[in-house]
Length: 181
Image (cartoon, rainbow, N blue to C red; front, side, top):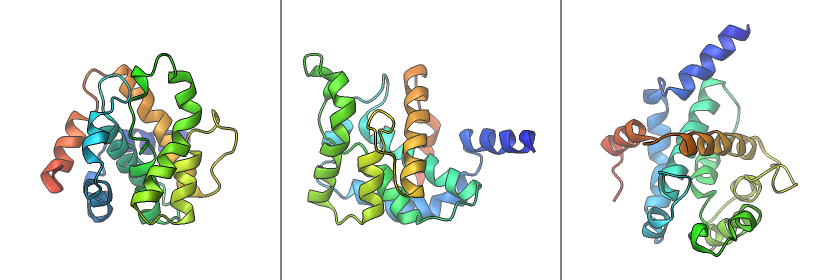
């Protein structure tokens, strides 16, 4: 049982199920790309060698991959929108005179405010955005979609901090199907 679980996790992390999620991913991917703040997301450095947009696309892609692979019953659309907009804070926290520690506590609220101003969000999407920094922020996500985004966000952050060129292959595959403008 354990080896079967680890095998599933390994295949998810290696992106072997790419084809199964692309139609769902494509259907919602344009929500951020159609927004007026795409340039700001691309300009914001995220973790080491990754910008905010790349990070958000990776979190959305792997969240959907995990939900599909483990057959988690949830709204795929809300999962993707919450993941794509979870870091929609639109500011570069690194140049803020040492406030990077405070950023961890405050950026989820800023992301929710910015996303709500530009997109019509449902309660599930709002929860995923606002609660994705659990346990740093003490209130956990209320819905499955938010829990998935929260966990995948942590995994992606670790990967981004330890990889020289994170998501090179993933972003190339996504751009073949749904090019970033």
